[in-house]
Image (cartoon, rainbow, N blue to C red; front, top):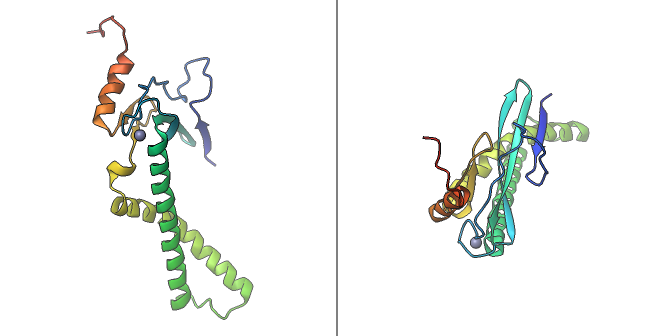
Amino acid sequence: MATHFDVDDSYAVEEEDPCQPATFAFPDVCCRCLAPAPEKGWKVGSGKQVAHNCWVNFVVSVPVCAACWSQLMKIRVLLVSATVSVMLLMLAVVYLLDPFELNGTEPSNMAAGYAVIALFLSPVSIGVYYLLGAVVAPRRTRAVARLSRDGDQVTFFNPEYQRLFLEHSRGPRTDSPGW
Ligand SMILES: [Zn+2]
């Protein structure tokens, strides 16, 4: 069984841990619309396999304003409910066509049969979710930022924020980079 380590950026890190995402300093504006003093955070995640059965998940909360947060939430809820509808429709089609001749068998048999079908459909639902996302919500409306597989780099989809972020993380340091 694979071991999952959920890494949250709210953890206080004492030592450098390869399983911890780097800590980031974000400019104090919304990373989507650049509104000042964003009061919400939007979690972006990534993960990688570090050993045979060990996966590391990184989660970083990027600053978004309340308006963008509710927009993002709305899109997510819409996508999830659309996905659920598609899955229910697929189950209904299976029920109507009855390709496995489940209908009319023992109720327990039938329930077990549909449970197995639902189980097989769940990975399909992930595909449906992303497909719907690609069709319904263009990337720029729902994408906020991308976290690298090592959890050490955040790339923002708003190029203006990306520029601010790079400037901000370089900070007031005067030492030249080592070249
Ligand atoms: Zn915003």
